[in-house]
Length: 179
Image (cartoon, rainbow, N blue to C red; front, side, top):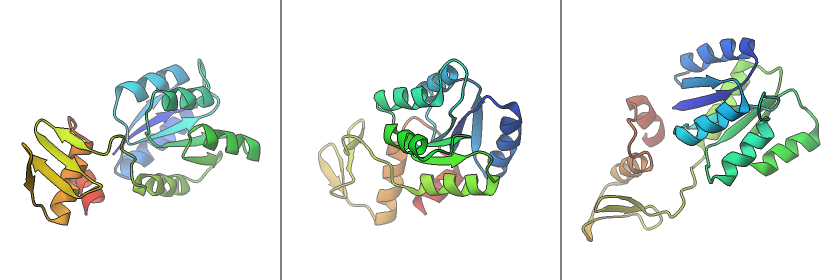
C-alpha cells in the first residue's frame, strides 16, 4: 500500500516515514502543497496524509483540487486546527478523516487502517482490460462476450487486480484486500 505524506514539518516527516514503513506501507513525503497535488495526480496512492498549513498551496486547496480532478484517493488531514468548523469544512470538501496534532502514531496507524478498509468507489462499475470485462454489481465476468464462471475468491482477486491494472501489487497487498 502506497501512502503520500504531504507535510512541511521535517520532524514529523522523519518520525512518520519509519513508522509507516514498519507498519508495512510504502511512503513518499512531499513538503509543499503544489508538490502534493502533482504527486497525487501523477502517482497511484492508496491514501494521502495531508497537513493544512503548507507552503505554496494550503491543504484545503490541495484537497479541493484533488477532488475537482475526480480523484477519489482517501485523504486524512493532519493539522493543529482543532475547531469544529474547520473539521467540518475539511470533511465537506473531501477529506475522509481528520486528526489533530499532536497525535499518537498508533492512533494514526489505526485511522489509516480503518480508512483503507472502506470499499473503494469505482466510476462506471464495469472493469475492462482488452476483451475481458468484470461487472461487480452483477458478479459477472465475460471474455469476448462469453461468460466465465469464477468462485467468489477468484472473482474478488480478479476485481482487485483489474482495479489496479498497470500496477505491480505486492503479495501483502493482495492478501490484505482479497483474503
